[in-house]
Image (cartoon, one colour):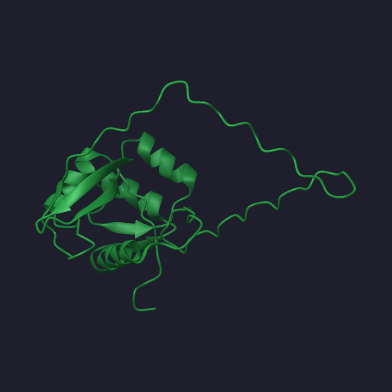
Amino acid sequence: MIHYQLRCGAAHEFDGWFQDSAGFEKLAAAGLVECPHCGGSQVTRALMAPAVRKSRRKVAAPPPEEKAEDNKPIEAPAAPVPAPQEPGGMGQRVAAGPIPAQLLAMLQRMRAEVEKSCDYVGDGFAEEARKIHNGEVEARGIYGEATEAEAEALAEDGIDIARLPWVPRADG
């Protein structure tokens, strides 16, 4: 994944994450990268400062272990594991905390576009992607579910796929 600072034609600045540089170029050329402020699709990469780490950072000592009155350590409760996303997410999990409204709106528009222009193939995604890659069936956009192992096998075989965060539809 690569992070870019972006700028729209109206000079609004925002950031975005993309699979790679070519992925950004392809999406931007197709008008699929939109400004979250004005919805403009004339988006370019803005100048970014490189991330530079300081050398030899001091590591803070861990906090002292808390103990109850009976002198036994107090254990923190385990962090909750987020629930899997609904179909289409290929086994991805959502991050803790709410998704910012602008990002949620963009993801909902992306989902609507995928559902409008691609065929849903369910859990047969990996098999259908292979058939398309091998020329056994007509090339078309598809979406569905794949296990982590199936997704890795597709990537190893040179079959390009994209994992999308699958959010609830905007209409409910």
